[in-house]
Length: 187
Ligand SMILES: [Fe+2]
Image (tube, rainbow, N blue to C red; front, side, top):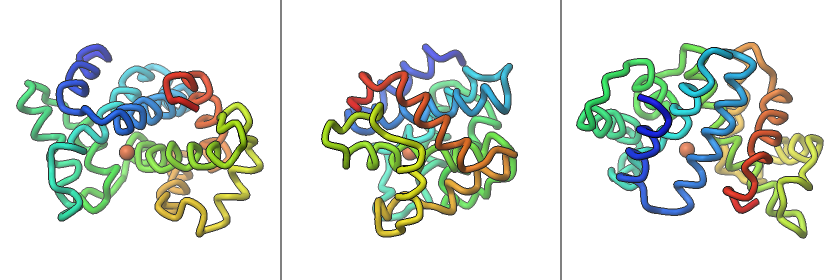
């Protein structure tokens, strides 16, 4: 599956603009992480980011978080995709699916997902709400204020360390890569 096919599938199953822009943000961070961790697989890592929440509007995760991830796998299979690395990474981004992250790409998606929302939340406290205004130092400061963006799971973000990168690296990648597509993200 190339990026275009992945995007077509995403558009077929995801309609909410906030979910779509979140998918683009996580795609961007995953590509940035791949540049450092898996330079031959940048597009593939991007696809994992793009599709990680594919089932967001297709399953009742509000009632049972365990279905978030496995439902995306069912959808992809229905679309003719067979890719265990992709499937396991999608499930591992939500440990409540029962899949625990073990591989580099799985830890990367586990960490990239909350970091995308976290950086967005930090940008939104600036008067211009622009990611260009956000400094690395402010992200770190807010990271340690556990009541700020409390829904962004710090443990998941810190699990980036299992890839060999640091939390500082993840913040750098998120600011840089989300900054490149700031217009698309509305940031
Ligand atoms: Fe997500």
